[in-house]
Image (tube, rainbow, N blue to C red; front, side, top):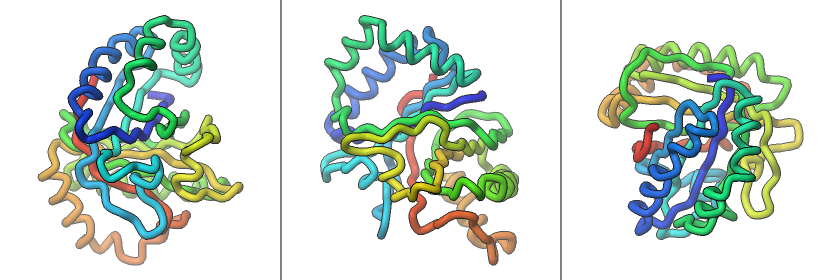
Length: 237
């Protein structure tokens, strides 16, 4: 994988089946356009934050659930070509007219992976993150992320991805920058951890929090504005 299109979507809880069907029906279309993987993960453990959180990122109402979703492409060029095809394909108009959620509050952007480490194995649970990182701290963030990826895999994760904001547009209602209250000198990092199951994820985090390597761990960004949550896959194509 060389490019990621990441999405965060507010979906009414009552529309889970309709959303899953729409995503499943259109996954072959996205694959036809060049996507190598499509993941849709339903909010399961999405906490409220003091400054930022996933619910606030998309202005979710009490009856809505946050979906963490991404499309993977072989290159930025193939992602751009896919977008051009989408804009001219009549099937996408059908999708736009039948969305079981408020598309105006969906946030999206393009990201370039800095870390993509995996051990192999089926994904049964996903931890998703958004972080505001000063542009000048990119190398420091990559170094920290590489160290953390080793620990996550040691504790059971099957894949760790950290992707740097490349094409992150401003939105009229919601966007990634507003989601983490990014300053003009900060970039958005879209990242996730894949686990075999929620149980292994929960145990992995317990071990992580007790690990001495986490003591005095310095983060090259404002962790108070980082957004995180746990998500259960509803589509992995």
